[in-house]
Structure formats: structure tokens, C-alpha cells
Amino acid sequence: MDKQSYFYGTGRRKTAVARVKLTAGNGAIIVNGTPYEERFSSLEHQRAIAQPFLATETTGKYNAVIKVEGGGVTGQSGAISHGISRALVRADERFKPILRQSGLLTRDARAKERKKPGLKRARKAPQYTKR
Image (cartoon, rainbow, N blue to C red; front, side):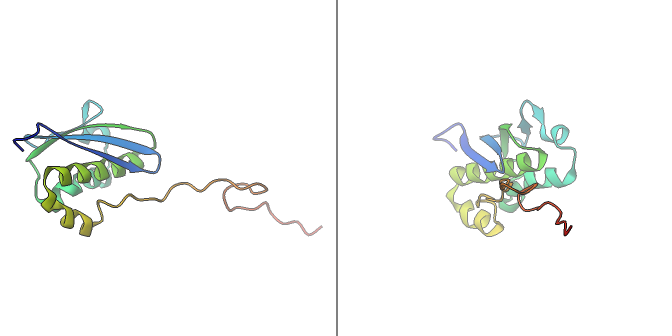
């Protein structure tokens, strides 16, 4: 931690992009200028954001300042988790196998499928009429 004052990581999920800056501190997680508990009221989303710190047992050792844009609440929380994981690997390379095993370093590639011509949505066809 002496060489650099912060560690940076970019996380992505669906259409959300999170830019994470980790600094040594007391464990505060600030998302777009507000504490993450206020921005993400659902416990499921809060758990997803805190997951990298729990997996590496670094809860309370780093402060995270996060700028997130695009997507919805679920996509944003997933992007934040991905970004925190990548920043933690930059902070300490020994976290990489732990985070990899937990599946936190892999970018979740699932996104909305495009609409096809002649269909109502990506796969829903119009109702068939016999007569």
C-alpha cells in the first residue's frame, strides 16, 4: 500500500459500468456521493456489493469511492462487485485465486437479447391464427 495511494478497477454488468477507487481506510463504501446502504435499499444488492470484501476478509480495511452509470439497480450492484474485485486484485495479487474461485472476477456476459424482425420481442412470436 506504500507505493500508491489508491487502486483502481472497472466493473461491468449488463449496461452498467462502475469505476472503483480503493484507498486504505475504515470500510466506507460511497456510490455516486452517497453511502451504498442508502442507494441500494435491498439487502440482496448490498450483499452483492460487499461480497468481494467478505471473500477476501478485508472488510473495514479499504474505503471505496465508486462512480456508477447505466443500467438498473441489479446491473449496477453487479458492476460494483466486479469493479471492487478487480481493484482488490490490483491491491494484492494473493486475492486473485480467492476471488476467481468465488466467481467475482468473471464478467457476467448475460445481457438483454436483441429483438428479431417479425417477432414481438426477442423470441415471442405473434399468435398463430388458423382461419
